[in-house]
Image 1 (spheres, rainbow, N blue to C red):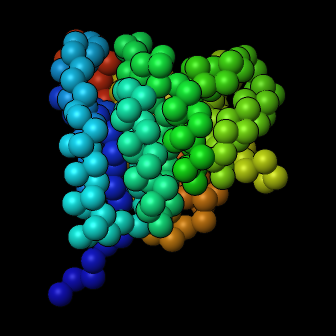
Image 2 (image 1 turned 30 degrees about the vertical axis):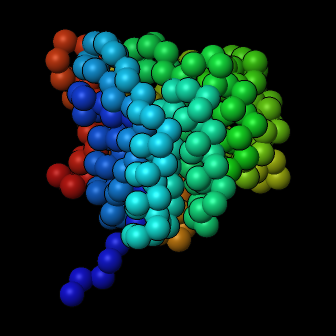
Length: 266
């Protein structure tokens, strides 16, 4: 009998185009050697051109999915993604607070196409309820501004941004600087307020980057489930996502996805 792989649970919305959300999470988890499980929080009608509809699931459906998985199968790490409303955020935060496993919070605010995925009324719940449960929070620059009001315009601003997010209670924050005009490198900052890790990777000239944030957070969760320390899990995840971005492919008429299986086809 084969050894059971580490178990990772994603709590997120569905992307019918398969590039982001639950679909991206499960693909990344498979590629990185863990068993992915899911709690669906919303259904979206989505393709390469944008999000055309969103339907949130009731809190009782989210709670029932979570308890069904965790109480029977167990979990070694949890990753959260799209939680569109304050009741959903608060429901998931309550469940996470009762779970003895590392948590990666991707505070999804808008889609790759600019479509809002988090109600303004839910921001305070993310700040006060969800972020304190996080082992690692992984905001991009737009999400940092949405959560804290801090605008990052240069690399040195990322430290201020990280401090502002850490004030809400996550143990570590990974500020993703991919949208910064930093030339040939994509720069991220990982810190717990004491240690700092500046992570740099080549910037690939590829517009097909749908699902990058979901994929990175899932890759971090996979590393944590396998027992890696936070800096090692994040470093490994960035390397995986950098390769996935380089291999991103056209799909439909708009922005295509990163390639979650790139490493399996080398």
